[in-house]
Amino acid sequence: MNLRPRITIILLLGAATGVGASIWNVSPQGGNAGESVAASTETQEATRDNKLGREFYFTRAMYSGYGRRYPSWQVDFPKADVQFLIGVRRLTNIDAYEFENPVRLDDPNLRRYPFLYALEVGRMALSPPEIQGLRSYLLAGGFLVIDDFCDLDQWQNFEYEIGRVLPEYRIVDIPMDHPLLSAFYEIDEILQVPNRGLGAAGGRTWECWNPCEPALRGIFDERDRLMVVINWNTDLGDAWEWVEQPWYPWKYSNFAYKLGVNMIIYGMSH
Image 1 (spheres, rainbow, N blue to C red):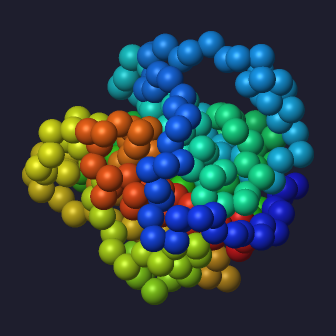
Image 2: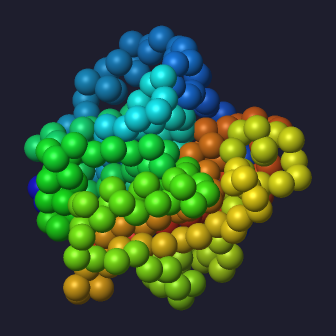
């Protein structure tokens, strides 16, 4: 990998027990593929142009898929990414690039970014160059976070695709005492984070055809390095995207930001 800085982390006031609603005085517009996004200000454009040399980039995987009117990788994009970064920058001292950073799996520049996020992988269908690009990335030290897919049919599709990338490694449950869950915040329970509609409605949190439990799983290499984190039957991205809305339950957005920060800290320091 070309980029793997050693990050020094400090807590900001109020971050120890919760994310803190006071951090959300800025909110990007739009969200979800196909929705409009507000025009950037001159200051924002200057920040976008000053992309190189930052400590952390929230990098979203652009991958091939099927069965949607728009690519699956675009779901919640770019609002979820940008809004999550508002929290990362205010809760930690990570020098994070403020905007979205989508990169194709077959792009050689992927190796510049040690942290990679992919969602809606139930409709993933990787090409041979994408398979080789992602495999090379992970074996070289990259860290992949999977999110926002549910039910057995979507699991089977993802399991098949990741098996083409890493056929020699198996998927296992991540134990609750793993350092991932104490990298920054202490997490002692895995919550099922509902999507936008279910969060607004209250009540059930699962998107599955039948009630299903959230699972935190992973893929480790032969040195016990965690290469892939898999969040199944849950939707962290929607909690990041809609945290500023009073109708989205604080319980789930708080958990999603804590787990998201932990994944960044763990992935960038191991």
